Amino acid sequence: MTVFVARMISVLLHPFILSAIATLISADLHQASPLLFQLLIFILITLGAIALGFAWWHVRAGRWQHIDAVAPAERKVLNMFLTLLLLISSGLAWKYFPQPELAYGLLISGIAIVAAMLISPWLKVSLHSCFAAVAAGIVYPTFNAIAIGVGISVLVYWARFVLKRHNMLELLAGSVIGIGCAMLYQVMA
Image 1: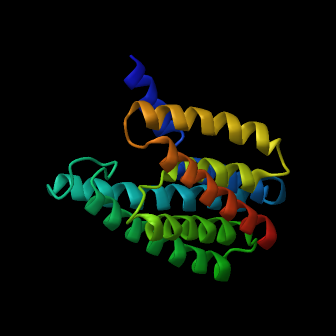
Image 2: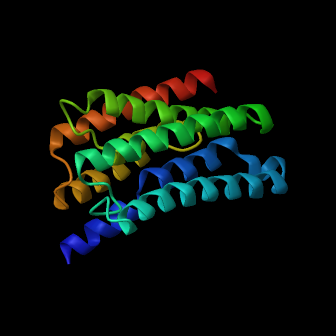
Image 3: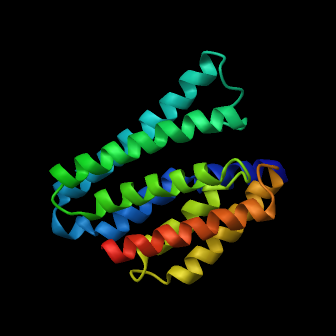
């Protein structure tokens, strides 16, 4: 039962889901234009579907063991793909989307993954804990980011630890990268 709950938390607090929700809150587009808000939701769902489809394709083809990209070689391929997807999407959002929050959110998400990849020869950084910190930083000061960030981070830490995906140092490293990226977002926004 504990593993099941940990899996559900890991899925529900997945980096993409946290980033998408934080971007929607930060952009506050639902007040500006319902059509723009719906477009943003469509874009975020499409990006998530592309990322999920990429991982599923690798599992289906027998190249990966799990959609979570558990093996180091799988993570490397997935992280490179996600970085490329996020950076291209950020550029497109910067050019075609009327409000810059989407471009900023996509850009710092790509930067977070690059930072994790640079550290990966020494440490398997937790992108789940990284994006929990990023999400809290993006919504700041809209909500009490510290309370939300700590609450989400505790759940993420527990889930990833129970699933034996990361140790405490890897979880903390993810949070440090996430806090740095969140600070960058706040400077840009």
